[in-house]
Image 1 (cartoon, rainbow, N blue to C red):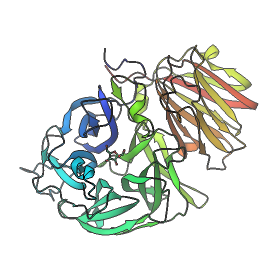
Image 2: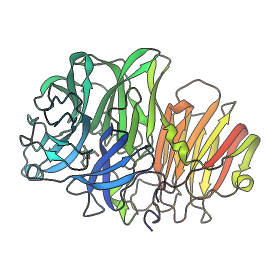
Image 3: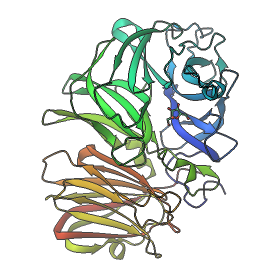
Length: 481
Ligand code: FRU
C-alpha cells in the first residue's frame, strides 16, 4: 500500500511521489487548511517548479489534490503565499464569492541562463472553487524585477490600519516591503536587514505577522537563509520589533533562530487564522535534500507548530509547540513516574515503540541527560541536554545511512535560554525524524535520519543522578489510510 515505504513519514505530510520543497500558499479558508508546496511531478530531484496541493480539516490528516499551478511562458512557479480577498480588492471575485489569490514568483530559467538579473518577478493567480482550479492573471507579472538577482518568495498579508496589503519580499540579502490596495499595483515602502541578522547566504521565504505579549503587539519577521544556518546549510532566522505599515523597526541586536536543527527550512505561517499563528517548515536542508535515501518521493513537512512569544531577560523569543491537534493521534499513553537513575532502560519498562510516538519528559532539577533511540543493528540517534554547555543536542552520527552526504553524520546543538532550573522536553519521533521542543518551546530542533530499520528502543542516561519526575510515552496513529 502507499505511504509504507522505508523512511516514509507516518505523521507528517509528504507527497505520495516525487520531489517536494517549500510549503507555499498556506491559507485557512471555509474550514479547510490549504497547503501548497514546491513540487516537481516528473522526478525525485528538484526541477521545473509547480505548486502541489493538499488540504486538511485538522492540520494533521491530509488529502492530496491535483497540481494547482503549472509552469508557463513566464517561467517556473516558485514560492509564494495565498490570501482570502474578502473585500474583493482585486476584482477577481464573482457573484459575491471571495477569491483565493495566490501571489508567487515567476522564475524564468531562460533569463537565468542568459545571465540577466531580472528573471524573477511576482505574479498572481486566483481560484473561485476552493483552490482546486486556478486562473493566472493575464497582466502578469504584477511586480517587475528592478535588477535584483534574487527577488522572490512574496508573503502577503492585510494591514488593517491602512486598509492595504503588505508584501514581504526576499531581495538578495535583505527584505523589501511593498504595499498595494488591489494586489496588482505595488509600491515600495522600505528595506530592512542589511546590517542585522545572519548573512551567510541568500535571504529567502520571509513572513511578517504580529504576536501578542502581555497585551503588547510584537511584530515578528521571519527570514529563511541558505546557507548560513546555525548548524550549517539552510535555516530559519527571525527578528522581533515593530511594523507601522511602512517600516520594520527591530528591538534586538543579536541573531535569533526559530529552529536550530539542520532540517527545518522555508518555514512560514498560515494566513487567515486570526491571532493563532501556525508555522510549517520543509523538513530538509539544501545541503543534501536532493540525495537523501528515499526512493519514491523526497521530503516531508515538519509538524505544524503554534508560535508564541515570551520575554527572557530583555529579549523577545518566539516559542514553538506542536499544535494541540496532534493529540488526536494519541493512543493510550504509558506514564512512568519518579525515576532516579544514571541509566534507565525505558524499553525494558514500557515495551518497544514501533512507529511514531511522542515523548514528554519533566524533571525538577536541571541536569545533563541523554535519550538514545536505537534499533537492533545498533544504529542510533541521541538527543539530550548538556548542562555545562547549557545546550540541547541531537547527534545522528551513527544514525544509519549517512554516507550520501559527508556533512550528514553530525551532532547539532541549540542553546538553552531561560534560567529556569526545572526541565521539560517534548520529542515528536517519526520513522525518519525527531523534533525537539524544550524549555517551553524556546529551544527547538529538527533532524532527519535514515536507519536501516526503525528505532524502537529507548535508553536514558545521566552522568549525575537524574531525577525524572515524569516520562510519558504516547504512540501516535499514522495519518494515512
Ligand atoms: C527556498 C527556495 C525559494 C524558491 C524555491 C524554489 O527553498 O529556494 O527561495 O522560491 O525554493 O523551489
